[in-house]
Image (cartoon, rainbow, N blue to C red; front, side, top):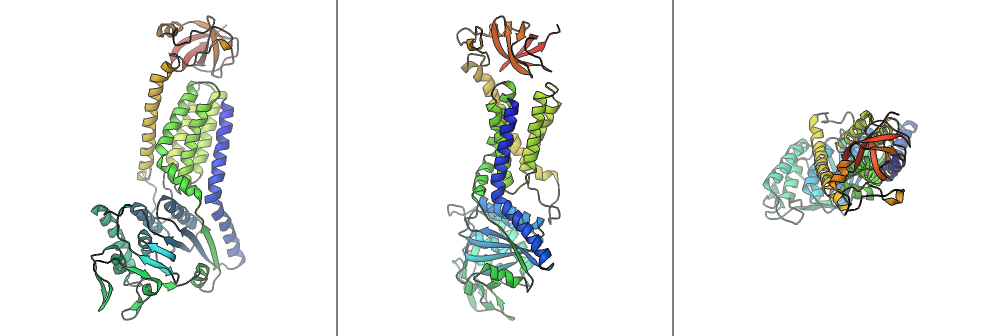
Length: 488
C-alpha cells in the first residue's frame, strides 16, 4: 500500500514540477545557456538584458513574474532588467511589493512603455532608472485608490509616498522633474508648474503621451519624464548596448502564474487537508487514498509557492525525501519512529521553506534572519491548527457514522462480525483488550487479526509479524486496535 502511495506521490511531484517549471523556468534556463554561449562565442563585453512582460492588470501573477524574473536575472548576472509594460494599473499592495523587488536588482532597471502605463504601472515605472516609450504610448493617472475606485487609508498613502520620495531623490540630478511629474499623476490637488508653464492644473491628474513626456524644460533643457521614444524594444536594447552585442533573455508569463496565485491564497487549507490525510493514512491500513490525498495537498502547496517565485524547487526535494523516510518507517523499520519523525519534520520543513522569500547570494539588502520565516511559520501553524480540529472532528464523529468502529471487517472476510451500528457497543470494544488472537495477514505493522471468530484491522505497537502468529490486544484507538506479538 505505501509503495503504491509513494509511487503515486512521486509521480505527482514530478508531473507538477515538470508542468509548472517548464512554463516558468525552462524558458529562462534555455535562454541562460544560450546567453552564456553567446557571450563566450561573440564578445565578453556583451550586454545582458532580462526582459519581463507586464502586460496585464497589476496583481499577484504580475508580482510572481517580476519576482521570478528579477531573481533569475541576478543568478544570470544580467546587466539590465527591462519591464515591457502595457497595463491599466492594479493593486496598491502588489505595487509596493514590486517596487521593493526592483530595488533588489544590483544593475540598471528600465521600463519600456509600449502601450499604457496607467495608475500602478506609472508608479512602478517611476522607480526604474530609465523610462522609454513607444510613439503612441501614454503614462499617468496614478491616484492611489482601492480596486472599487474609493480612497485608500491614509497610512497606505503615506507608506507609498514615503517610499517614492526616498527613491525619486536618487534621480534628481539626471531627471529633475520626475518627482513632481509622479506627484502630479497621483495628487489632483497638486498644481505642477515649471516657470510660467503649467504642466498640470489643480484638480486634474497628469497624463502624458510620448511627445509630452519628452518635452524639454529648464536650462540646460531636460526632458519632463522620458528617456527616449523608440517603437521597437529590440532596437532599444541594441542602442543601449552601445555597439556591444546585446544578449536578450525573456521571462514569459504563463497560465501557471494564475494557478499559483490561487494556490498561495489557499495554502493553509491545503496544509489542513494534508495533515488530515496523512493522519488517516497512518491510522487506517488499506488502499492508501487518504495518504495520497494528504501528500498531494502538500505537493500542491509547495508547487504554488515555488511558481510564485519564493523558494526554489529544493522544497519539493525535501518533501520527496520526507515521503521516502515515511516509507522506510513502514516497510523496513516499522515501529522505530525515528524515520517517521524525521520524514514528518522534513515535510513540514519543506512547507516552511517553500513559503519563504529566498533571494540569490549577493542580492543587495538580502540577509538571512529569523524574521523571513515568521509569516511561513504562521501560515503553517494556521493550517496545523485547522488540521488538528479536523482530526478531532473525525475522532468524535466518524466512528459513530460507521457503527462506532469503521475498521471492523464484515463477514466478507470469512468470519462473523459484531460491527453493525445496532450490535456494536462500547462494552464490546473494551472487552477485546487483553484477548488473544491470530494474525490473518502479515502485520507490517498493520493488518488483520482474528479474535474469537471476529476479524479486525489492527496495528502492531512495534516491529512486524507474519501471518499465523499469535497476538494480544493491548489497547483501542479511534480507527482500530493495537496488538503485540506473543512469544511461542
